[in-house]
Image (cartoon, rainbow, N blue to C red):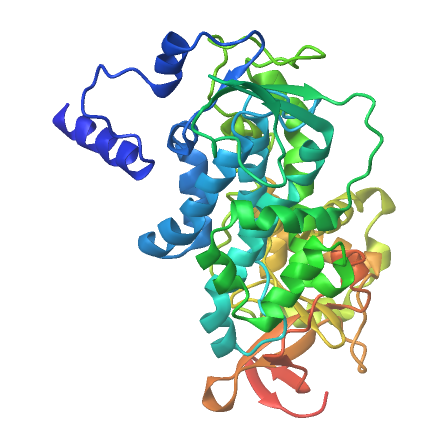
Length: 470
């Protein structure tokens, strides 16, 4: 029991909720007793109390950010505190994430998804490894802040929030202050503007940046012109200039949206009545982020899409017997009715890339963008697929993939292409299938090529690799 008490104290201290007496009522309860709430209102809560009910989501973000505890608290946790002050328990929309606190839940889920997808990208795009390592934390923080700001515009334009305090009531201006800025404000009422046909541009999120990100965070973001330019471009609606940052955020924002219906069904919250929100006192503060993330689970109980981890690359070169078999494979010996696994493989590959669980252009990745197209490292990419989908022969899937003819052959007619990684004695051979059409894997998004990989005309003979013409 003492250990449990110490753990609880540590959590409460981190979120600013440690109290001197165990029986001290929460701020919400104390507020209700001192100032009876108007009907259909919610209490203003401190950010620590809002985040304390979302410990799992905070911990998930910290894990994905991959930074030191001190750095996380100074930049990430401080930003979450400020976002919680601004969002309070507002819902995200009348339909999805419509429960009290839905906006905060949605923003935190999107941030976690974006940070996971970010792990599959080399940032800055095309940077040499030493530069990518030095700037990793800054670009990761850029992704995190964009994910939060990206979810803030729509509810802000759809809602009217009335603040209540000892001196009366007034309409809140979400562009200039947070709900908790005025200590006299105790309660607020959220109403959706059903007749509102205004289309607030995405660039309006720039007005929220100063409210949600501390000056020290903004100063850090602006310290790198390349990152800051892409960051500003996304907030301004210029997705082309935003490049990889924009791609990451757009993909991340689709994930919570795709599971919100299932998450809502599995949660005790129901959609709010037309106007206003549910009565105070019976408003649960727990988030649905855990339910939403659980909905990413595969039917056979495997890890969620956000939690998938891939094994390290044990070998990147097929056996010589496999090379011979692939070069001589006659596609006519495979019936058309057996092509489904290959189609499923391509669907799995596209979805995995889109959702960030299949990394690319990274050490040990099975997918690399090269000047000639997309290299799929074999046999590991097919082994990953059969492992995830509950067995089956990876070589059978590979043969069916060849039958699809999505790949291009070498000049000598072989299915397998060979690329070099590294220099001098540290060179490694990557062998795999080359897809000329990047859209087969990445859709409309065209990522940067991996500058560390080059087609050096590598041949493989009885397990020995050497430079030469094929």
